[in-house]
Length: 532
Image (cartoon, one colour):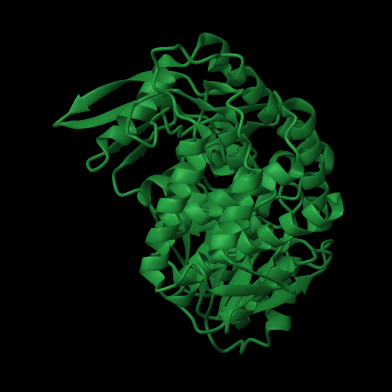
């Protein structure tokens, strides 16, 4: 058995960023941490159990993911100490106490699990936290560090254990008054329990270690195109140098009055014909992970959205010089959407005139494109500085200063001209497709979709809180930019249609994005009827 102990809530520091949740439900790599823990566990055991606080309500889509992975949920009373909670979890799991089991703390991940028969895993650290450490004195094998400097650069118990003799562990716990650390010392006396070093530990239990572990995890998955240190992040590309050069130019040419909305730009260089640039590395979370995985109050989201809109308002005040190419709304929407839609139809063998039905409303891709074209804004009122990809995944949020920091701008026109200018309505559309269009939920896999016989069904996992956030956002955009809900939806339809061929690597996700365009089309039709 592989037991993930996530039966207590995260600490106050982490709660201030993500809301109240068990550590295994923290976001990591556009998934919850438990997804990565389960992947580790599957390589080790057929039976996986996840212990959670008794009061925690598992979101429906998360429960479905856990069930699909055959994870057994154990709900533990929150007043129990760690030792008592482990015993309660073992009891609920119905584990055979004659068989070994593995234990992983819920705030812990490894890029590679340590191997052995009867051991605890430890790692070398340089930080000072309230960790259990392997002591270098005569006061016991394991001791609790209170953050004193004497334990700096010491051997920290990192949260992974393999117990070959569970009955002896229970005996040790009972003899230690259910104190987990004391029981480990006792268990060592009863068995051949040893310590084993791991250099593959990622700790998500503290705010600082969360971000440093996340940076390491991201770098490991980025195929050398992203390098992250504690001070800076470097982006490069050996295939799309124009993209990287355009991003770098955007940060370099950004007016000074807008620079507090971005990380500090640290310059560009070319090495072996590869363009790269550096930005200050910020220990912040992107809004897509907060929107999908966190549990923040409505008031927090109002502050976040106001900060996003403030950036767009300030951008709109920086008008395009006459000599700069910039790009029009027609280039950004209609022209690009028609081209991409044709590519998608060729990929999938779909006719634009085929009829599709969603919740009683029937229309084709052609009519969906036509009705959205009717309501896309026509005025070029806001040709100004434009981010070009202002969606939640490219927006970081600092809750202490109530400010956003935006990254990964486009910086290039549809015709391949490097420019920091365009129509700000496009940025509003990109922001809308995260807030209203639920793009990030689909990318995270939080959906159910079916396309059968021309019938479109889509279910996206959102709460009542998300509906309130969407309503607030719609009114905020109307107030600041005089855009109507119909115009917002029309622009989103165009975005979802234009991105379809770009998601050919995942058939199910592509179907969800396709269905989402029709979901938005249905909303647009309903709004048209209501306005008559």
